[in-house]
Image 1 (tube, chains in turn cyan, brown):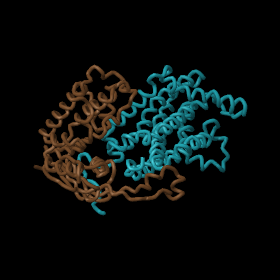
Image 2: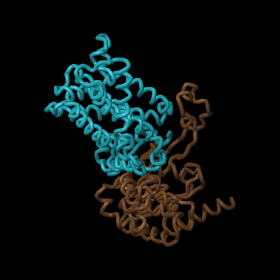
Image 3: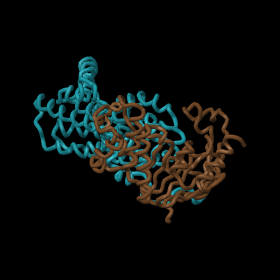
Length: 272
Length: 243
């Protein structure tokens, strides 16, 4: 039928980015809730945000550097791997929290209208706190290892935008699909592990065979990880050939994911 | 009297099979379960004017909840149209937006944000909301320590402070003690006096007659009878008890 749907009024305007912007207070409230709930009644509090990248740094240094002799060039391996683990942990923690968010909040989705994007994106926003703490520690470690602060660190904000865009895209896409197919929840840990090894985190991009390079170039996380390393550890601007394709893919991915999300959203309340 | 809520020829059918698509295996297997269509709404039209309360009554499964969900924009209709003339707030099983670990105050911010209120407006209304719910001394307690009644009172207090032009009420006045219920009715009267249109769904026929001047009786997804609340309630009572 042609006229099925709503008249656009103050309340019933279309969803999507514009609607989310009008409800930015909701995004703030949901992010704040995640932070409050996560660290309340946890003795270590915000230290948990650091525990994962630090523990991974120690393990990967032992396994990949000491045992398997992976080289990180002039940069000390622990620092080399930590610079990549901070953005990776942000991606991993956000996506893991965001993907089931529509299903765990089924009560809300079934009963109240609000921009549904706010649920997965609330996680993506909340974990920014962990990211900030991780970056602070990266700075401290860099200085401790004798890497001087450099103006190239100003490249961090645009690189972090690429990281957040990528994370938001994956969070939107997979959280929406998870409403229809719970398989996503089971597949996610495996998928994240594959992406972890497909991204130059524990090894340098230079270790990747030339023939495989094009495939790596389209991974937005490669762009972020390589860019962060060059900026913070080598004091140089990101390589355009490495960072540009990944950043373009990140933006495209966000557009596609948001379209899929809005299409899937109409039936959330009936299906969830 | 301008209508703030106009509903025209609303229809919605649920396909049972769709809900069975829990996992990929179900989809590949072709949605094994039977796919019986359930017609929840079958051409419902009604309108609620400014300052008016329209009650919706009917048996379980008559389509009342689906009607509220379509109006609240939670689920799309197959056919028909809903026109809403301003901010809409829904009182549907209040407290669904609460998190047990957070305090009353934190939950007011969270739940109010979900209902579309700005954080600034919520901070400004915090004391008033707490007083309305009768929970001024409990606002810094995690709501997991609240009783069911306290929970519901706080949820109601937040929702009515959204200052809606259109308010949807679904069976919420059955919770809370008599004193709170009286305050709720006062608040509903005040909202009506201020021009809010209210769609009131309830099984409590006494409450319907108390709050609403007009009523609609839904039966099997259609409007069976519409008119003065007293007459519609009487007809429905006769049907429900004898028939």
